[in-house]
Image (cartoon, rainbow, N blue to C red; front, side):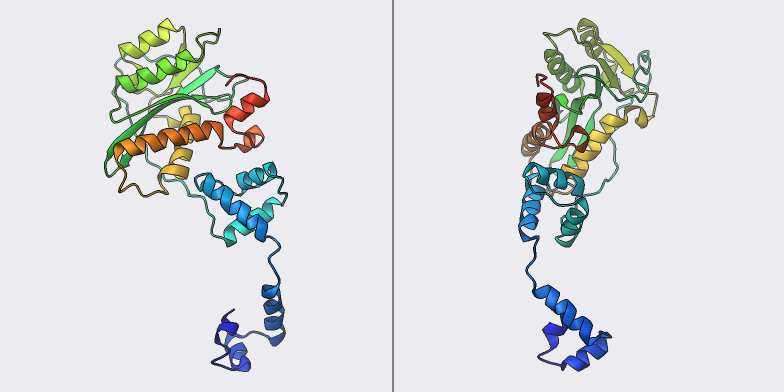
Length: 285
C-alpha cells in the first residue's frame, strides 16, 4: 500500500530497495489486496452485533450471535476480523464501593461458602451495592443476582446507599417468589445495610435464609462482584458521561439491566440470555 501510494513520485525499484521488499513479494501482496474480501458480509454483521450489544461482546459471544443468525464461521476468523476492524471490548478497571460499618449485629454463617452453583432458580440469591461516579453526582445500584443463571431478580437504583435502597430491592425480590414455596439463601457481604432492623425483619417475615461473607473477603461474593465487573467494563467505563444528568444515568442503567436479562447472551447458557434460557427450559421468567 505504501509503494502504491508513492510510486507516482519514485520509481518502483527505488521504493522496493528502500523497503527491502522483493519485487515478487510486492506483486503477490498487491494482487491479494485487489481480490474482493470474501468476509465483507460477515464483517458488516459482526459490526452490527457489536454496536447493538453495547460494544461489549468479545469474539466468543460474537460468534455465538452469528450462529443465531445462521452465519457460520470459525472462532479464529471472527477474532481476526474483529481485530482488523478495531472491534475491541473494553477491559476491566477495578474500583469497589465499600459499605462495611463495623460489627453492628451478629453475622450469620457463610452458607454459600463460594459455591455459586444452583440447580434451580431461587435457591441462592447474591446481593451487594456498587457505586458509579459521574460528573453530575454519585449513583448506587443494589441488585439481587440468582446463582442459577445470573438473572437479575430485582434491583434498585438511587443516589444514596441507604436502607430504602436495599429494602426496596429485597421487597421486589420477595414478590417474585410470593406464590411459590421457594425460600432462597440471601448472601451478602458484611455491609451495615444487611444488619439493620428493616432488612432483618424482611428476611425473617419471608422465611429467607441469611448468609454472609467473611470480613473483607470479596471472593466470598465473587459471582456478584463479577456482575458488577461486567457491568462497568462493558457499559460504564467505555462511555463519556460528562453531559449526562443523574436522572438520565439512572434511566440508561435501568435499561441496560433489562437488556442484560432479556438479550445479553451467555456462552455458559448455550448462547442464550438468562430469560431465554429459562424459557427454553419451560420455566416462568
